[in-house]
Each structure stands twice: as C-alpha cells, then as structure tokens.
Image 1 (cartoon, protein in one colour):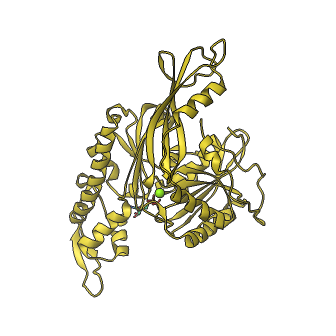
Image 2: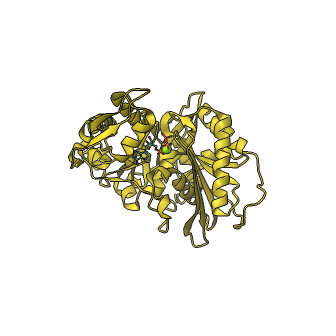
Image 3: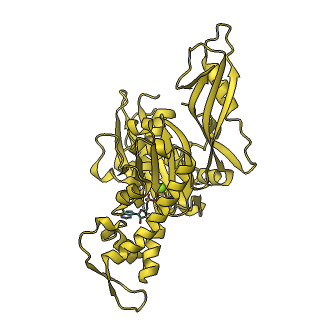
Length: 411
Ligand SMILES: Nc1ncnc2c1ncn2[C@@H]1O[C@H](COP(=O)(O)OP(=O)(O)OP(=O)(O)O)[C@@H](O)[C@H]1O
Ligand SMILES: [Mg+2]
C-alpha cells in the first residue's frame, strides 16, 4: 500500500462523466480535494459510443476538477462498465516448493497463475483475477497462507474478462485527453470501496449499482468477490416508462420521477394529483401519485426480481448477513430500499459514499460512488502519482502505458 500521494478516479457513465481527485497524507488519511461532474453521457449500455466527444468530455471534466482541487493530474484509475463483463470462479493447485514446506510468496504467485489460467475467447481479455481464499493440504478457507507449512497449496480466484474492444475504446478516450491510464477497474468493484463497510464485506453483501443504462451487482463475502451480474435496465428506462405511459416529454418525466416519484406503494402517504405536461400540443393532464407509482414499481420490481433470481442461482443469497446495498443515481428514487427489501427479503440500505469521513456534503451522492471508489482502489491496490501537491499549471502528458499491469492486481 502506498502511503501518500494523489489518486484520481474517472467514471465514464451513461449519463455523466465524473472525476474525483483524492489526496492521501503519509498516515493514509484521505481528503477528496475535488470532484467534478459533467452531465454528458459517455457510454451506452456499457460501451463508449463516440471516442471524440467522450474524450473531449473527459478532458473538460478533469480540467474542471483540477481547477477545483488546485492540483495537476497525471494518471487515472478508470471505471470499466460491468455490463459486458463476465466473471467466473476458478481454482488452481501447486506443490509447495521449499524443502521445509513453508509457503513462500513465490508459491502464492505460482498458484494464482495456475488459478487464473482459463480459456479466454480471442475477442476478450482478463481484467481482474481476484483471490478469494487459499487451501493448504486439507485446510480450506485460509486467507493468507504465507509462511504456513504444507505440501499442497490451492487458490480460488474470481476471474473477470472484458471484450477487448470495450477496453480499447476506454484507452483511446483517455489517450486523447492526454492523461496516463493507471488501471481499468470494473465499476461495481471500484464503487464498493466507497460504499460498503468492512463488516458488510466480511459478512456477505449483495451490492447493486443502479445507473442510467444498466443495473449491475456483485456479491462480496469474506472481503472477496464471488459473483457478478448485469441487466440492461437502469434509471433512464424508468424515466422512459413514465414518458411513454403518461405521454409526456422525457425531461418532464425525469422531473416527475425525481420530485414526486415513489416506487413502493407502502411509502405513499397522500395520493395527490400532479400536473403532467403533454407532448407536442397535447394539453397537460392531472395524474395521481399512486398511478405514477404503478409505473415505477412495475419496472423496479422487475429489476429486483431478476437480481434475486440471479443471486439465488449463485447460492449465496441465504448467506448474506450484510444484506443488500444499492448505489448509483437510480437508488435515489423514493421507495427503492423499501421495495428492494420486500423483494430480496434482505435488509437494504442506500449506498451513499461513506469514506472519507470528512467528505463534503455535496459529494455524498450514490451517483459519485464509482469515481470516489476508484480513488480508494488506487490507494489500496495500485501505484499513484508521487508528486507533491501544486497549483494547476502546464500538464505533463504521457502516453498510455502499463496495460499489462492489469494482470498483476493481486491483493
Ligand atoms: N433524485 C433522483 N431520483 C430518482 N432517480 C434519480 C435521481 N437522481 C438521479 N437519478 C437517476 O439516476 C440515473 C443516473 O445514475 P448514475 O449517475 O449512477 O448513472 P451513470 O453512472 O451515468 O450510468 P451507468 O452506470 O449506467 O453507466 C438516471 O437514470 C437518473 O434518472
Ligand atoms: Mg455508473
């Protein structure tokens, strides 16, 4: 772990580009020096659609954040949308090499190499191989086998692959903005570091990120990633439902959703009428809050039911003592945690970024969890800019490098 320095997270989402600049002191305390949001959609269903315009948005967003933070950025941790990723659990076994049968770091590296040696289709690449736990002879569930005595060392890892085209497009975007890419990180895994408590990570938690275009989820237990999933349904489709059913423009539908929308009938206290503008020349109409709830609940119920089905298949659902946590802008819809708790049959909370403790009020938004989580991921698992804080000046740009480093992220 690096003691100090700047760590920068860049999240290219379907509805916004978001950058967080975090500064760690030598005691490991984090201060978010700046957080910038540009309401420009950079991806569609997890894929970058226009390299030039997204590259320009990335550049503008980072420059704004640099101004706010009074810092110059060089290298970035960038989110990779979970939508097109695939995760599998894999295992490997090696013989402990030392004569005295003490497990060395070399043995651990070897067994992880074996565990992540899976067949990857030509158009995909491994972006994460995250250790889950080890076994030593007949002892399972060993968190850290270093220096223990045994003959047969086993490891289980969660391997995540991504389409090469998806990662290359992200690299191109960052490249065009002139910054160096440190590492690409699956967005749900990154944001989990800003949102989940250590207790939740240990006891088992279903972590859901409901964004604009997609809803993604992971299961974390004993600090490790065990399962991931994704649906091409997010908050934008919920808005679209309102727009279609009530025949109102998208912008009006978005406002209605945010201001009076609720997706759980049990939460509605007063069934008031709401004036809904008509499309084109159609006159406005009065619609009751319960009718709006019917539309919202139908879509949200579908999303959580599908997540439950998937989590049940993973066999982890009954073992999640940490319940479920929902982040992403879509989680801000009223009634989300209540509906999710009802369907998933788990305790549910909304995942507002928790760390660092002194986070500015305006940064505490589940939509910013990915950018903030990338900063923390960078500090925990990666390298960072070791430059001292300085005022914004001429930026030094470097070519994108270190892509092969993605393969090295063991912790
Ligand atoms: N107050 C609110 N109430 C209801 N929905 C909201 C609210 N604020 C934001 N949203 C919804 O959150 C969604 C955007 O969330 P977020 O910013 O996490 O998406 P994104 O990261 O850009 O997208 P993705 O993760 O799919 O790439 C939009 O659909 C928006 O309507
Ligand atoms: Mg997102």
